Length: 126
Image (cartoon, rainbow, N blue to C red; front, side, top):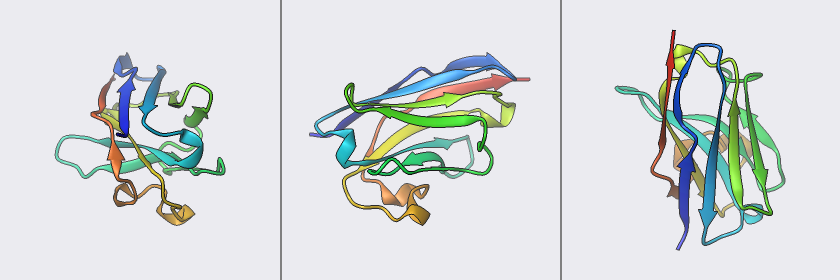
């Protein structure tokens, strides 16, 4: 059974940093596409960053240059380093995974993923 568990969320002031983690069980990251998504109240879930099985990464324009997605295959853990946080980054953050080969142009699409964590809240104050 595939399980994903996020951690590392919290409250920070604008300009601060957080690192989110997503621990997986039931499969190996090396065989999965993985992504980070977020959803703010009243808004649709949106893709933030994703990493394909070959290590290719994609970022939403809104976080490019500020966020970095990485994975530790030995620990089977996905990370999202978030720097220069802004109030508009406030949302529930989710990690997601799928064993299928996801085209690069679909890596940030929530519908591309079958497995989801429960989320971790990130709040950025101005």
